[in-house]
Image (cartoon, rainbow, N blue to C red; front, side, top):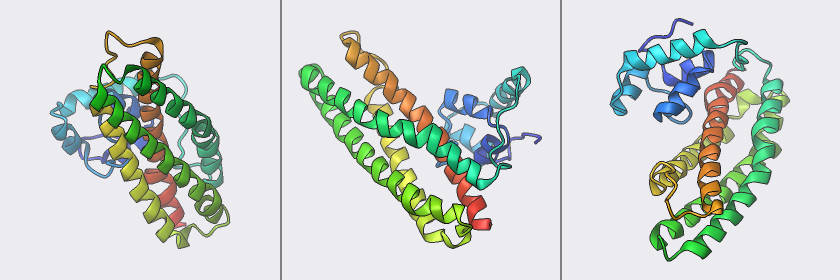
Length: 223
């Protein structure tokens, strides 16, 4: 594609997957907020659109092998990819992060009582919602799409998109509470690891939600 300022963020992320590196670098929402033009997304972040376009072109030029184009792959292959790369690791990572968050809150509550208490509450809410959300996709929505009934899945898709928005709000709150995951000087190793793994979770969920919101769901509904 010829990328320009009027392409939507989601379209760019779909057709030029390496652009997501630039979006992540600048905090541009390409999953839940992928429906707006790049110029508007840059205005919201007070970024120069031409600078961002230049960074995207640089990423594409320096790339060796092209990134997979999931908008062109069979829907069954895309679902298999989502399950293997995102769902399966989340089933393991989510409870581990909860244990870490509880430990940090218990041991260091005196250092930042309000922040650590709210962070734990927000994370536990996100974890529980994601676990329920993935179960509904794995047991209901994904089998519908695999069986060729994607066009009849408008209701479940609408619910999943709303839950994606809720997850995005929780991720934004976690980033705000942690001051963009800035590790405090007094942080122990568990605290430092928690911040790094929560930031990695955010990045992974952005890619995960993008694949569903901007690629899987529209293609399934149009099938």
